[in-house]
Image 1 (spheres, rainbow, N blue to C red):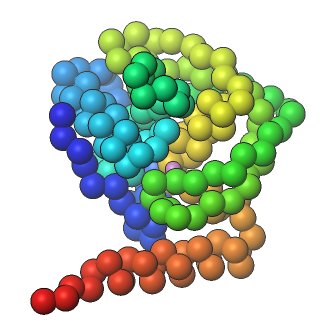
Image 2 (image 1 turned 60 degrees about the horizontal axis):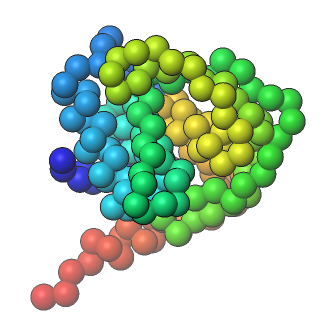
Length: 174
Ligand code: NI
């Protein structure tokens, strides 16, 4: 397994729409394992292929806080087929927006159709943190970041901060 570099906003790739996969093969499985390792190392609870610069509809998630017993979810071509009317609010962060957090309101429950690690079509009913996490990651596949739900003022402030961080991280002292 190899860890990959996570793209940081602003980056035009994060704004692109990803394409569905035709099938889940060994190459896909290797990519999913790399994504999982990258996510655990970050650390984060969800990662979309978009965030490592691969425009394919693949997500990995693990919301378990148990270090011993990891419970990864591999979601290929995820499709949200139901969103509840009732909503919930979580303070969201994102590996592509380091150090930035905001309260985001989303449908509290969602149902998902997807292809799993073995290439089988599955359905999943999610609520709570998992529901929010799924919606956040599916947004990535459509080029959407959580800051897009904020006011223009707040969004621009966050992008400005990230741009500043990016510039200072490129500085070298020799
Ligand atoms: Ni994210």
